Length: 45
Image 1: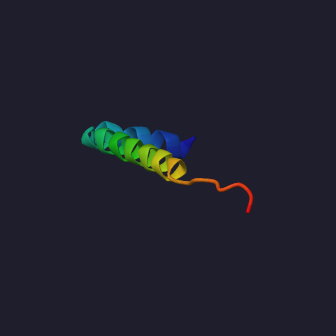
Image 2: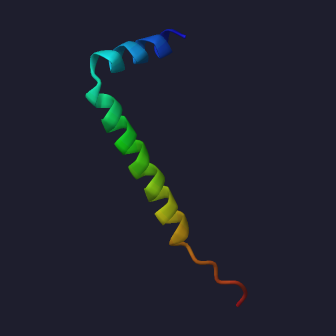
């Protein structure tokens, strides 16, 4: 639980990092969706 408390304390001291972390997570989730959508299966010979 110490790491959770230290993360909360860090974000409380640096509120702009909340927005940066949110943006990074959104970009990563979109990149995963694009990567998964770009794959096409070619069934059979």
